[in-house]
Length: 119
Length: 327
Image 1 (cartoon, rainbow over the protein chains, first blue to last red):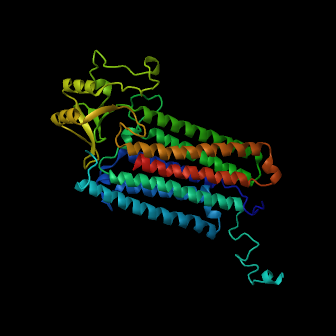
Image 2 (cartoon, rainbow over the protein chains, first blue to last red):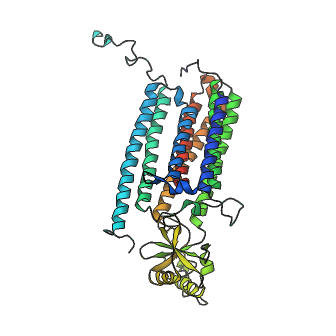
């Protein structure tokens, strides 16, 4: 139960900063989701709407702050940080890549009429 | 004998044994690895959701039309406001949790009690909000017609606004049959509740109200649902429709693909279960703080560990929010 005693100064300033940052990003996301600017919907990047890319990037930005500031990952050793973050990031990227590729392939199969699900 | 293990030449090195190379206690490290595995579970669910959505990319329900309720604002189209509020509640309870951890570092028992209490309240409000969201989803709003192939047909007026089933149907004066109840027959069998309207009543009403049209699941290039012409609408309703759907469950879904409902129930349900268990664990630790367990232990590390779990629940919600409601 020995806790490292060097690390006891209060961090409330940073906590509130991160809270306002996360709130602000959420407000931006909701505002964009309601407003839906036409140019962000019409522009596509790697076959996905620019708006959706913005949502995903902002989400990862929020996830970074939750993990680093709230879960205090920034204070952990490099070994722990990498064994948790790199493992997760690698496996998630891999899984998302294969499943989305496969889903898109099945969509093409339905579209080409090889198989019909609306009978 | 002791010479076989005593001198390996690695004494004093980081991984030489007898110390903590990662500089965390066993419990905290295992909480991190639990969180990693749980994150992979959630990613599996969300990636499967993405798979199904890509599979039906041109006919997936539009979240803004599904989740547009707000308490005390009946009939007002309020897309995402409520879920944004839920997100704030969860982020704020994360803040109070991290403040509790911070107060624990300084051994301020009273402050830890206050902040943990606020965290628990936030969690309870969040779970309640999720239950309300489920209720609206299960109950449905407008109702729809289902075809043989499991497609959903919705009704719209001339301007393209949604029309509820009770505004379409022409109720027959004489009902064919009542719901069978075990008290009425010799068979001790129950029958599922009969639909509010039969498909014949819907057809009769639709034929009479000539300004109505049918909206299919198919999305056009702009991302709007396709509205059929009057002739096509009549044809689809009279040849393909087999019954009505009100609300959503695991088999039928008035908003569109049943898979959408399945994933919604499964992912938000699994997340809600995490929030619930987080609240229960928080309550246990909360009482431990009150009775002074961690004062005697001279360390509030348990608060830190449940804090990690609680932040993780918030972290998952950030992703669920994006992929279910925004994208």
